[in-house]
Length: 424
Image (cartoon, rainbow, N blue to C red; front, side, top):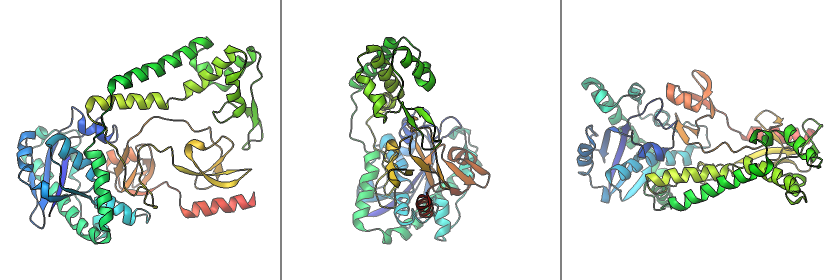
């Protein structure tokens, strides 16, 4: 089979970019536009095409995708464009980002095309993409578009050389897994029933409204521990409490994991039941948020599955739903242990890389796209260290700042945490 390397350059702006919305929404958005695309077949010279969608479709159709291995760096993005906008599905898909993550993900090496090209001595990556912010294809001058084309051609050449370096190190069976992982996103088969989702969302929202109506109080009162405590007392119930291991002082036990609080759901007084149910119901926004996200996706097409191959050094997949993220904690009964982030209790001290610290509980903050910039992957608010200082991954991407390090736990962190536990 031929090896066909491809790279798309697309329109993006300060308000419309992968740092603002998900990859799925970005590619299916009405603002989406392909500025140009470069393709390299085997060791032939790369070619660049820029024009209308119909013109680019004609250009892409000349390649034998049905009998080729399509290669890209971050293939999830390029293969989705290839299928969703140009109805092209290659015979096989290879992703140099996935391959590099498996080989170098745990070694602290940046996985950007730029950094990997430097690591393997393949050449330098350009910076013309930074000058394309907010520019439609029609906004480019002739020389600007030509320079952008050279930039894209260079990316394709670097990806081809990188593939040649990485491919011999990847077992054949893993190539198949990478191919399937990318296709779960770029060739989705799951259809969402929007009618059922809307009905479910309305039922969830109605149930919350009914809970609030029963209590005859504002949502802000339910969310405030002192105010909730007073409401319970006015209903003849002394609020459950516990001793905080962090401060050693008494605090209200109003968490979902506090059995005494949950027991009030069966209290003989209906107002007490309503107050507790409303508190737990109002604070649990996961179902409502997820349902709304599925409704929006159903309007745009089938449901892509955005899994990342080799997201952890163990080789497991990762995604945007991080409820299974493992957290190192310390508590009196068990000492140092790891838990899923959704299982962390207020009594647990959480290791922050330097010490065990107290926290205010695990709160679902909605869905956030995992973006990639300069080899670092994370949510847009993930803190990274750059040549411009300590900023968010979003700001690093928008400002074109090179990343020098990202905050993440290391084995040394865990070892230090265990030493702390032995001393306490």
